[in-house]
Figure (cartoon, rainbow, N blue to C red):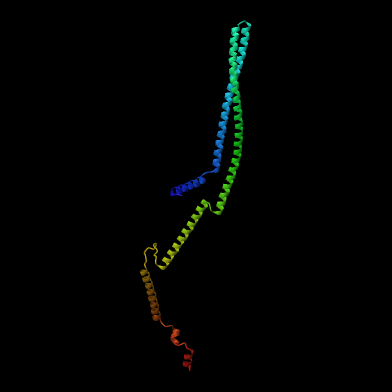
Amino acid sequence: MSITRRIAALFTAKANKALDNAEDPRELLDYSYTKQLELVQQVRRGLADVATSRKRVELQLTGLQQSAGKLQQQAQQALAIGREDLAREALARRTAVLAQSTDLEAQESSLQAEEAKLTLASQRLQAKVDAFRTRKESIKATYTAAEAEAHINEAVSGISEEMGDVGVAMQRAQDKTAQLQARAGALDELMASGALQDATLPVAHDDLQTQLDAITSGGDVDAELARMRAELAQAPTPPALAEHPSADPAAQKEATS
């Protein structure tokens, strides 16, 4: 297969798939039913036209028959008064009228046959259309139920397009939440270690200033301890301790002896 044919086949397959996804069988059935109704209406209009023509021929035939009867009477009247020439003329006209009547009778018979044929065809077509309508509604109901069931199953299984989009959104939200949590934890660790300064403080502190503050704080403690020792050294000795410089029992016993 040439590359051109392969490309054409691919586009045809794509087009058929898109058409299959886009078309709705219920719409096609309704459209077909509408076209059948239009056909029934056309047959009925044709039947009405044939019936109208038959009625017109029937009226013409009735008029010719009445004219033939009148000419027959005129011929009898002319013969009664001795006017054979008028009687002959009336009979000649009557013959022509009867000939026209014969043609109209043949035409009427043909129209009656055509009318009967169209009537039967209209009845059969109407019966088929009614049967198609019943079948159409049944198919539409079955299709609608199957479509609803398919949507329900897709929703339950989570494979529908809408549920798939929801699943993707949830996954993205979870990933973003985990990323933000990790970022917040990293910032806390950096701030705790001093590698990252708190921008909300009035004055920024660096690592050197932190170490200097620690040294200064330690020097203040040492100075306070020295001051406390000096105060203790300058304080007077309590009397009890002055009278009994040694609290050792053995020394007191030796002093007594």
